[in-house]
View 1 (tube, helix red, strand yellow):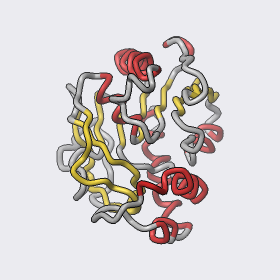
View 2 (tube, helix red, strand yellow):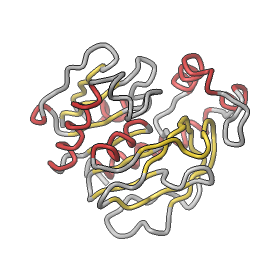
View 3 (tube, helix red, strand yellow):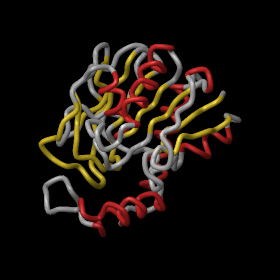
Length: 230
């Protein structure tokens, strides 16, 4: 399978997703939108992943490539190809399908629990009843048409959604590695404000290897589901 990913900043790449894709034999390509607005045609890939970034999906004047990116995401969802959006990527899916994206009441940065929701039913991905995930977001979204909420948290009601069998949006990060967590801090340290759901740098970096392994395993389970291998 040809998997294409949309990268918005150099420090938010695939993380633990890359080794899973490589081990499964998938071909990987990317659009580094921070360097060039060029996007692939819908026929150039079989699955699409939209990564995170510090910008807002509403910043089309500052980042005009967002217009074409939303169009591509909308086409990919409509085509039935597997589509995964992470953080900004989930907000892109929501916006591309006509839902509102706006500042959340609380920033959520660090390691906080998410809950799989009771709404999840047949044909939907099921998160554990409770698990600790890595977060770095300040905005949220309304659920787009046809979406079902599949996870929430104390700070953010719409943490994850699924549309049909092949589109999933996540506000939180399951792909995070120790290296990518450090990169986020190095590039976005100014967001570590004193707030209820914002951890200090030391707390963000303190979880051991098992914390990363746990979220990476959950990402592998989600990818197997989304790519039809589960």
